[in-house]
Amino acid sequence: MTAPSDARRAPLYQEIAGRIAADLEDSLLPGGRLPSERTLCDKYRVSRVTMRSALAVLADRGQLRAAPARGWFVPGRSGGTVGGAVLQGFSETAAAQGQLTSARVLAADTRPATLDEAEDFGIVAGAPIFELRRVRFLGGLVIAVDHSRVPVELCPDIGAHDFTVESLYAVLRGSSPPVLPVRAEYSVEAIAPGAEDAALLELPTGIPLLVASQRTFDRTGRTVELGRTSYRGDRYRFRATIGSAATP
Image 1: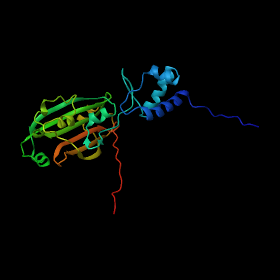
Image 2: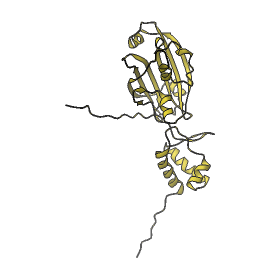
Image 3: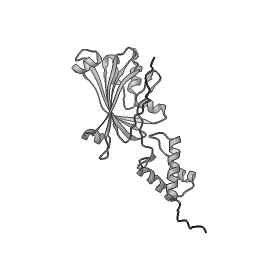
Image 4: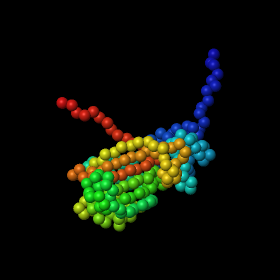
């Protein structure tokens, strides 16, 4: 005698959500945009109603985000990395991964260095410092607010550049003589956002900031930049490979 089975197959939209999630792991970078709903319906051979239910499941899990009139995106989570002998900035790292970045400049000013900055940079107090603050976007999504300080003597025309589209590190490398950022001291901490950062980053209630502080050096060991970047905690992931030191 065979007992009747009450097992029921999961709804089709949940099955499709699982298939999409698996495909995303292999094919789409953080910040990337999904194909149109019509294309997805054709690919997975389901109705638009089923597809929208599947996408809603992934959005509830935090694996996708809808942007009105723009489509569905994978939440951006990646930050700068060090590749080879050259330290890359936000826009360069994203470009290497095929992702689109943009920026909104909040401030780009020259002012006298404070005593602490003079000590950090090895310059005289009052020497000109270029200070840059920007909101950074990845794939159309707001990711971070960054704050950089650079001695003007390293790149005298730095104030003439358009940092809505230009990379700070690319500008430094293109100066004469070139300034080559190659190493950085980097620390990350989670903090509660202040009112200004929360507004600039469009932070939902309860989402922390991940604040990265960076001191960047050239080949000679000279400090060439002091940076502080405040990332949305739900759109940034820091990865590091850690190994033991060699022993005799």
